[in-house]
Length: 166
Image (cartoon, rainbow, N blue to C red; front, side, top):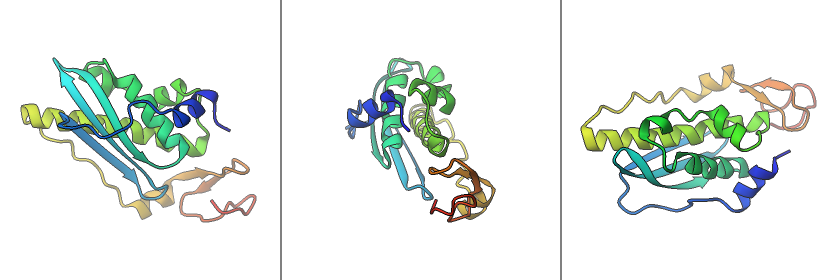
């Protein structure tokens, strides 16, 4: 189900921990799946010098956080803002469809840390983060069943094909 790279980053995550006096902090969470990610960055001359993270969630969420931290370290702020969920998933050797949202959360947490840094340093306004109405979002989102891989509406509790709990 998971690639060797995902398992390696889950079992031996890089850059875990809280950072003292970070230049930027970004936090995201998905109340539906329970994954919570917090990224800390240190910046020098617009280059991300160090990255740390704290993640509460599944193995994929931890692996994603580890990979995003590795991808961001040494990048300029603009380069790091271009890190996408597809790039993260590709670097990890792929993720199951029902875990792709984890790669999105990792990139989002990093991006929020960068925007927080820019806000602190330059007074740049923070983006208007869309904290969606999760019930409405769930009804329109598709969830892949981890047992039979059939797409189900996000508000369903049981798979329409195999009947197992989502």
